[in-house]
Every structure is written in C-alpha cells, then in structure tokens.
Length: 459
Image 1 (cartoon, rainbow, N blue to C red):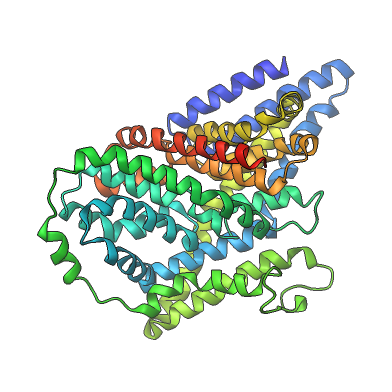
Image 2: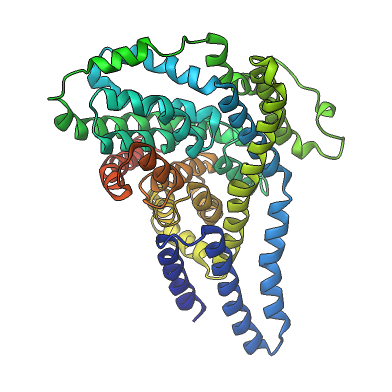
C-alpha cells in the first residue's frame, strides 16, 4: 500500500511541478506525505504511535542537518558570490567577448560556438541561470544581428549554459552531493574525485550533443548570409581586457595547484580547519579559492570595492536561497523515497542485469530532472539509491556519480520549467516548449552515446 500510494504521490508531485508550483514546497510536502503514510501503516501494525512520529522526525532531521551542512553551504554560496562579483566587475563579459572573436567571421560556426562558450563560462560560474544571463547579454544581440532565428538562439543558449559545464568545477552542487554520500564508506572521497570521472565523459557528451544540434539547425540556417551588423557590433564593442577575461578561471587554477593529485602547492590543514575538523578541509579550500578569485576580480575595479563586496554577499544569499534551499528540499524528498524501497528495487534489477546500471544511472535522473527542472535535485535525491547496485557490480562509484550528474543535467536542459530554459527563452523572446522540443533529440542522442562509450570501455 505504501508503495502504491507513494508512486501516486510522485505522479502528483510531477504534475504539480509541471504546473509551476514551487519546487521546494512540492518536494518537502511529498516527502512528508510519504513518511506519514509509512508511519501510519507501521503504527497500525505495531500498535505504537511513535512510529509515525519517528517517520516525521526522519524528514525533519534531514532538513536541519542538510541546511547546516558546511560541505554544501561554503562551496556553493562562495561560488555564487564569485559569480556575482564577476558580473559586477564585468569580467564575465570580457571572457565572452574573447571567446566569440575567433568565430564571428565564419557564420556557420556561430551556433556551435554559442553552445561551447556557454559550456566554458558555466565551468567557473556554476549556476546555469547566471551563465545564461552572462552569455546571453553579449551573444543574443550578436546572433540576432547575424540573422539567427530566435528559437535557435534560445536553444543554443540554454544548451550551452545547462549541458554540464559546472560538473568540471569541484564546487558543483551535484558533485558535492555525490561526494557526501560516498564519504559514508569512503571518508576521503571529494568532489574533485568526481571531476576526474566527469572529465572523461563530458567531452564525448558535449561533442555528440553539439554536433547533432548543429546538424539539426544547419539546414534551416544555411541559406542565410552573414550580416554586416554582426561585424559592426563586434568592432564597436568595448576592447577586451585580458586580465578581466582570465580572472573567471582563477579559482579553478588555485584548486588545480593545491590538488593532492598535482602536489604543486600544499596548503597546511590548520590554515582552514582545526585538528578535529579535517573532513571539512576540502570544502573550505573550495570556498577560499572562490573568495580569492572574488578579491582578484574586485581589484580590477578598485574604485568599486564596496560594490564588489556587496555583490559577493548578494550572490551568497542567492546561493543559499535558490541552491541550498533546493538541496535541502531534495534531501528531504530522497529520504521520503526511501520509505518506498526504490533503492532496493534498483539494486535487485542491477543484480539480475548488471549492464542495466549505466542506463538506469542516466535515464532515471534524466526523467526526474525533466519533471522538476532541477538537475541538482535529481542527483541529490537519486544517487544514493545506486549505492547498493554499485556494491553488487563493483562499479566505480565516482563514475556512476558522473553518469547520474550528466543524465540529470540533460533532463534539466530539456525541461520547459527549468530556470535556465525560462531565462534563455526570455532573453531571446522564444517559447520554452519550442526550445525544449529542439533539444530533446540531441540530448538523448548524447546520452545514448555515453552508454555506448561505457559499454565499449567496459567500465
């Protein structure tokens, strides 16, 4: 009965999200409802009301512990603060102008260039919506001047900003979720371990998706001649400052130099943590790198240091509200799903057919993100369910985490209720459903290519 009613609750939750109800409210309410159903059944069977109270408290406990989890709050909030400082100092705009320069003389390359630029800018910015705003501010007028249709502009912008560039950043909330879950059995697991696996997969995904998307749009675009307005717009644009253009990658450089894998620079543990807080060192190091990058960016506009400081804290507030809040809701939802025994079903299915692990790890999060509009919520809620299957098959847990995260990112990109899609369509003046229909084929093709890569490599 719990499973049947729980599945009905999931369907209703998906319908509510599709109707644009507040996602966090839907996830928390669904978790509490499933917990109540399970608690009532146990209380009736065992004649003890404490089972119902215990079920509720499991959800409350997850809510409080996740909201106060330093491993999430510090990296994510400081990353968003860094993104806001980049916007305030216009460093992100200089980076985008630098990236678009090589493509403007070859018009047929503008669409794939938009996807690639969005992907690269998303690496340091982390937030998909912020990436769409930063990239769209520069590229949407240029693409319009070149005669590219609005649907193509919005599709390329959403695809680049949401395809998964942030998964190459250790501060990505999806990777932090994977690392936190794996730390129960692997205490030394970090989000940087996940980045290594994502790096081996995401470029295949990017190449296939961009290629298919480019081919789908090329036929309708090939008859259009290059507009002189594009060249004029680029020639009259503000000159590129290389110092500003390269600053967005400063935190990534810091993390690379201080990584144990490179061993180039060793940061003393007691600089960031006490002797009893060693497990928080990695997340604090990410936060310190973001603060350092923000400081360097602020120095490019010394007369506006006060404004840069305000922008940093505004960004951290945005991260707490829109990202941490969603992580909390997703954690509660994941705890509620446990009452249904979904993780047991996945484990049993993989035990009978081990080859099903990768397709399940990709397409189940994809469907969840398609309904919720959040790749992070999908990863946070579902990755834990694959842990028993990972133990059965002996698969690399970080690699499975990479597949889950990439699948969730694809689902978010093809969701008409995703914030990044709505922002992209708003900037290009297009319809969300038209954009997502354009993106479904390339994204699914890219995911199938990843499954093929996994099977061919035997991993």
